[in-house]
Image 1 (spheres, rainbow, N blue to C red):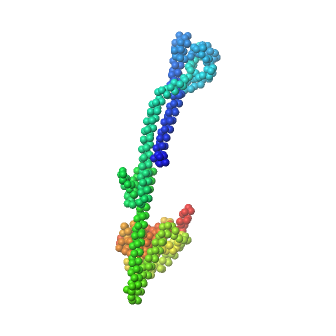
Image 2: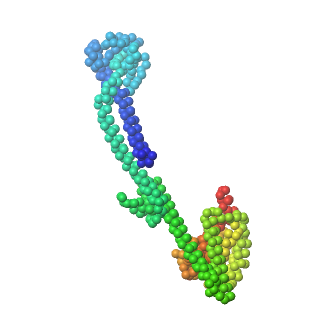
Image 3: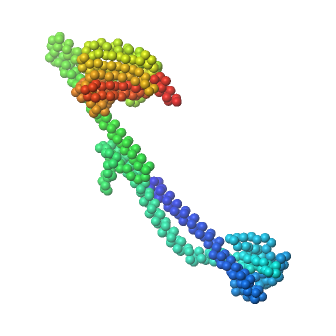
Length: 480
């Protein structure tokens, strides 16, 4: 029972209340044992006897009667401390106090047997000292009072307080533990069935007798538990999104592989059964088989690249890269392709462009994908511009085109794998299966950078690659 949070909270609260009650009982017992009431009562008798003797001269001659009536002892000492008279001479001797000791503002003195007396002393007109004394009250009346009068109500009050404390502790433990139990039930459900139909964080809690929802958990309980619930719900959303992405990924891969496989199977069958009986027909079938096989090979390579980048196992060299020379080389290689498409390709590169720390081939892959993509979706007579400069402590390489642009809905998913943009960007991106931009983003992020995009329908698109200069490489930032 006490291995759970609920049990431990209940036990801790009960122990705290029990300790508080014990301390109160001990303090009250000590207070009663010290018996301040009897002290005050004795002090009042001493004061009354002293006042009576001072105000009534006749009482001075009958100190024995005054002492018997008020249960006190009246003594008179000379200024030198010699005993002159004693109302109870047969009792143990009391000497004149040499120095006064006080307890609870009452003066005390010990007799010849060592017993403690309370006394009050005053100087008489003739110079002598009058002392009124009484034995210190015994402790037994206080203990009797505790046993006979207070013990039972104290026990009853303690039991009632303990019961109320236990009920409050149970409610407090439930307030904290119930949301955690709900999280445990949701986690077990996720482990058993997966985060299916994950709902928003505000969804209602399951009613009594209803199976726990597999999805988001309602936020309740103390703030720490609410924060844990929010983190759990965020985790569920990420897991559900990841599973949905995996399903879409498998479906997209299957779809993209289906077309080339169908072509390969169909044309190879035509060669086998003699349908392609002429040299030209066989040549055409062989070329289609070769092209579709090459397409599947490129897709497999891209998928392998993405898997390695996701897992962090991609082999990326980390050497200084002259980004300006890299882009100049791409200009020379891509300008003929732009010319054959009737598109003007402009490069405007800063002369003092800093170097970057990274993999030359991978960075070339990023810019090749982006420029090739811009050329593909720019109509004849259009323009693709590539610029590079250093701003705000980072290198920015901009690839812009004068195509038909990208809709806001497509911009949200343009870097998703296998995402196919609308008909305006009709063939997809990269190699035609929606992997080019996904690979470009992963490579940029692996170099400590990122890719942003700005576009509006009818006004072209602009992709910006942000990379840290060599002085801000990943290793140096990590060392800092």
